[in-house]
Length: 238
Image (cartoon, rainbow, N blue to C red; front, top):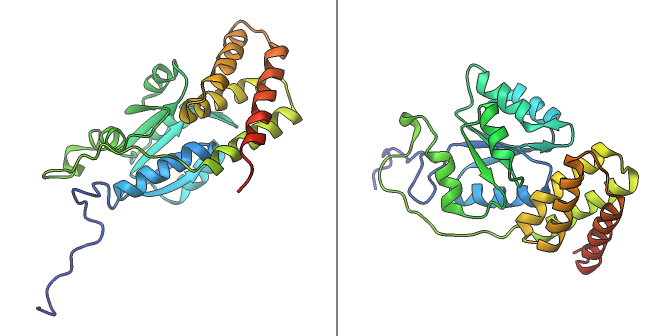
């Protein structure tokens, strides 16, 4: 072996890890959704940084510029569309900015804010995740040559699901004002879809429809609170 042979750079994309060398900023307050994205990034070779609100994301962006930003539209301190607009108008621009949500109408809002694409929750397919990012890179940044397409689906950590439920239980206990109910239903819409919890999703959608007409259906909010507590009792902490 030639001792002076050049070493292969560690951050050059490979067919198995097409996102090597990329850093993805995930702006998401759900630990369950973040764990899914963490696993997808690991399988793809990308590094991941996480911010759980707009303020935290902006602090990150003062220090470094990621290759990709994936931004949930419903965040505890505002709408993710605000950050999408900021990033797509900034110079230099983040190469790929994707909106993300479990709400049916969210893709329209994401597109209007200028996002390059949209990820609908649940996000579990490795091939779909990679395609959503790689297909939107500038032509000179896309991996060349054949790429292995893995039809692989990931399962996030159930402990992260429990942590999200605890967060919502605490939030509902502390405050049941209209803004809080709106945040809770948005949060649980994505969580229930990701966990494929249809019973929880049905209650969330009932409350969301009532909120669209300005009502606060306290009986349904109480039912939601009961479902959250029931699931916490069924999934003891590990």
